[in-house]
Length: 129
Ligand code: MN
Image 1 (spheres, rainbow, N blue to C red):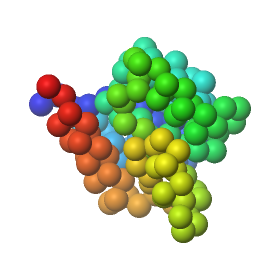
Image 2 (spheres, helix red, strand yellow; image 1 turned 135 degrees about the horizontal axis):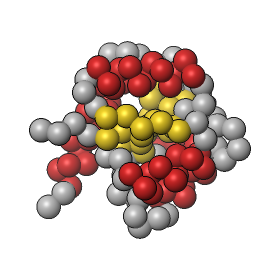
Image 3 (tube, protein in one colour; image 1 turned 45 degrees about the vertical axis):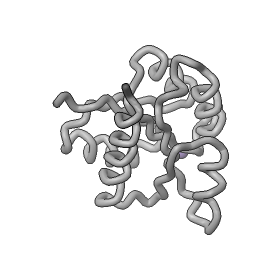
Image 4 (tube, rainbow, N blue to C red; image 1 turned 180 degrees about the horizontal axis):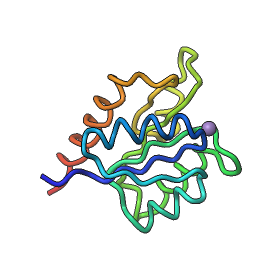
């Protein structure tokens, strides 16, 4: 089975490297963007199977970028998981209500992240005909 293409949108180099390493170690193909604008461009061109989206980005933030992708018929089927440092109670609900498909809090748990990625990829493929 071919490994899925995953887009990481993250402006923090340390987090970007950590997530990239975790995903590549498991054989996923990784695309990267450091801004929401670039993330949207890559998502439209490459149609990844999943997007991991930092919320706090320079310029357009992750919520705005997610909203653009969810409003575009070419990309609205792609699950988008928020990566966020906001760890306050209730934020998970707030982000999923906003339109994200899931939520990963920072600091990133290196055992939790691959599980969440897998969940979203399998949930997504079940919907395919
Ligand atoms: Mn950030």
